[in-house]
Image (cartoon, rainbow, N blue to C red; front, side, top):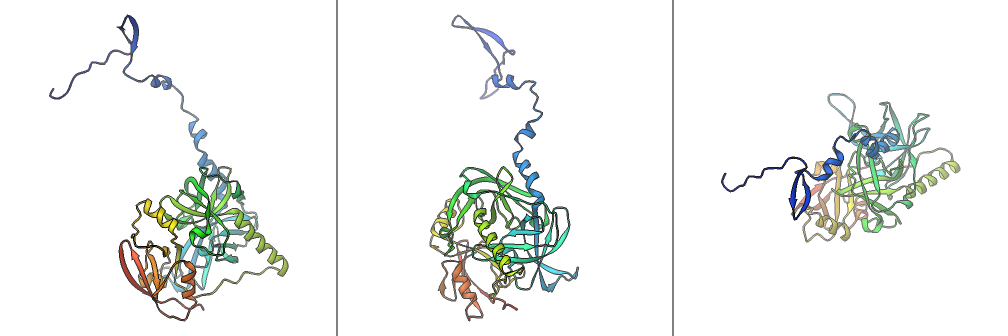
Length: 367
């Protein structure tokens, strides 16, 4: 044997003499003996705490689908699905909490809600706050399973959380992680005029589970899944802020009787976006995200709606918008201002990776 040596392992527990003392030698570490013949039955039940959370919480999670009533699928003859997301039931008579961007992504949209048991209902948007990205949807159904609401003020960094959702109508899709920060201020995310401390987690929040619950290990919703910036950086709206939104909606209906909130109307581009603040840019670069060094601010395109003007114009998820019609874009409010302006065509400067490009988008007028 070239370049090697031969070692004869002694018999198990072979005794040998060393320095006048009797010692024992074993080829295997002593810890192996501790598990020899040990019954491992019951460990699944003991450590599957994530599965326990899912069992308690999943029945209240719903799939929300948005269909365009002006465009029909050639093969099925049904309205085309342009977006989808999740939500969760908070009242037995069919009140569902979700993200505003899930249900107001397109004018003339039809909202459909699918329950865990497979039943499908038309949904009506009851209340909406686009600034904090919260909305409620009502379906006509009673005796539904309800998600328990916890307190996000009690949440601690390092605490385990579970993000639930139904992406693409796949029920009980689950991701888990820990809370990275409970004090991610809205100003850091470029949301002006809102005093919200967002929950940051490394649990993956995707297009499909956006609007679904972020749940603690007691099975209580402590946040509403909002968006993932990059792997390891996701954000959720604290449930304490959602409670205020829900209370305002209840007070308004009590004072005026039942009525649905009028959805704000502006020209439609078809993207979900996140303001790139210096703090978020720094975190993206620390995680080796492909962000050019000369980008100091802008908008990250997180989602592009199928068939939207943004998709037709050539925008893709991950693009960074830095200017529109020659005007610098520093936050989402700048984009909304352009959509409310008189310019019919938006000439958009973007970075796709390290390459600077220009695309042209013609937003749709509300009808």
